[in-house]
Image 1 (cartoon, rainbow, N blue to C red):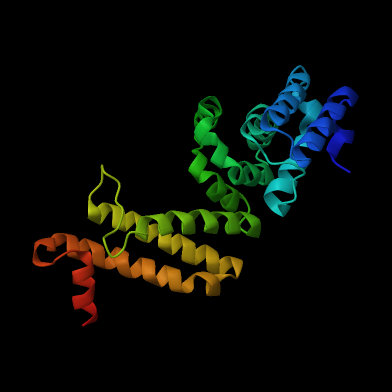
Image 2 (image 1 turned 180 degrees about the vertical axis):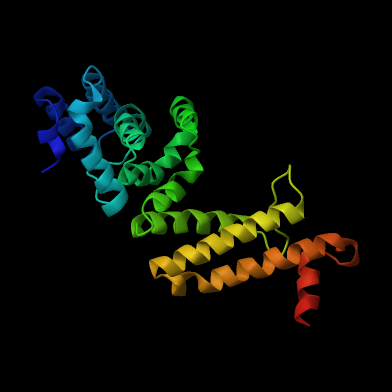
Length: 234
């Protein structure tokens, strides 16, 4: 059974109606209409009324990946974010982790992002903050490992053409920051007990973050980074 028992009766029925339409694969317009009807009915209630339902849904989505419906942007923005924000304000480490696990939505939520920034929290630091609050939080570690791995995979995906650098930073500065990310990934993977799954990738990252700045200083001597790498391996 879903979390209907934590919602006012009428609102809970609309939630169940939305779940039925979503899980039946209804047309997008119908799914969004059902979601919006639920959110409109929920809006007059204070957060305290529906917070247990929201927290339970966040736990299902982030910790267990068995949420009854996808966490769509309006659901996160209008229902889950307010409940999680209360938890952040009270210092609840679990809420920090859940907010971090759903933070991919925040790039499309400028008002909510601003609320976090008013608390001196950047969206990309939420999982780090969760780990700082609870150094034994393996779920937060695994989530942060995934974030860093995906980021560094993007950074190096064009090799041997080169490493992707941020346009407002030098190659040396970018690679220094990327190296810090690789070391963070290594530390978290060790602590979470999954280093065997990431050791080869981390070694590859470290190699390129060490060599690409060297290549950049003398790139005129080579026919691209691939040529530099071939000479290093010769």
